Length: 507
Image (tube, rainbow, N blue to C red; front, top):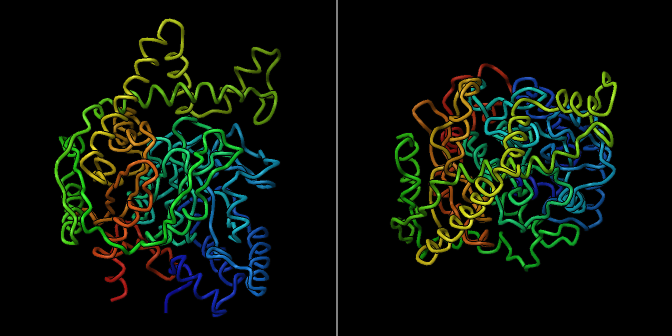
């Protein structure tokens, strides 16, 4: 029999509805597992057992009273850049260590109303700036497939928690690949929704025109369930799209017959790992075997995506992070003797190296002598990328690409080479610049047994169709389970073990 931590959301929901397990039992099982494995994975910043058990009891009362929804009683966790009333929201930074918001982010309130149970707040790259989750004030997150490797970032804690069985699902945020890269590195499903599809109210801003909240889960069906709960217009968010969203769970198993998939040549060029290329093409073959068609296409301006992204995101970060001045809230230096020194010391002590680098880059791009040459030019490139995607969608329903040029690499391997680190986002940033939805589904393992994800990119508000395609891939290839999640909770040296599909584990 499966342990509770091995069960996906939709199976837990069925057992809860049939009264075969209780909400407190499920919550306690996950809290016990967190206590056992947190020291190895380091995916949580704050663990909230009292909140979790109180919410579990409230969820049980709702279920007993016949007032339950699909997610009632399901444990989960939030990336630590989403405001949670009464619970620390640190953004993995010394600058906000100990900051307790007086209100909830909209997604937090929405999931609380749905009856979910918050296990805690998840580790991340500081202020969501990073691709490996090594930029956290609270230490790096380790990959449950191999504890010597990175989890991906910036939502590394969210992906690792799901991959290790420390949360059935989690919410992350994606500014340039921060849901999709960790999903690929940790072998879980991750969705970056269309910009404006999910409220950003209460999400601590990194780059406001790029940030988007989305789910990470162990499988496509669970991802669809969570999206159905959190998508929708929010008057508290001026960028929230006033559109009626189709149910993501309806017709999830409809298949891909007749769909057209495009392979952008810019995403399959030099530098792509051979194992990744094979796994992505295998996913395409799976789709073709189920009645889809595929063909080559082009998104020419995507080659300029990294340059445009790091200029625009850093410029917005420079403006958004100006509020952390040591006066209103957050860290305040105790050594300042005047106002100028207060700013300098507070920001010097409170921000980590990567955040400082991006603030400086953004301030430079916005400066009077370089605004037109850098910032305005990057905005023009952003428009070109958007238009190239729209042209590609004239002949294809969905575009297929790798998520990263490599699988998860060793901790510390690229910290001394920022350019190589930034190039890890080469296949993901254009999606954010164009405001499109993208889904990552595990599709294989490399020669070292590390997971590989395939990225499916869709037209605006095509989340339903992306999930249908993802479901077709998952049903053909199976789920991929980390060594840590496949066990009974033992920490006995998962380092270097080769992960397996769910079917291989059960056999």
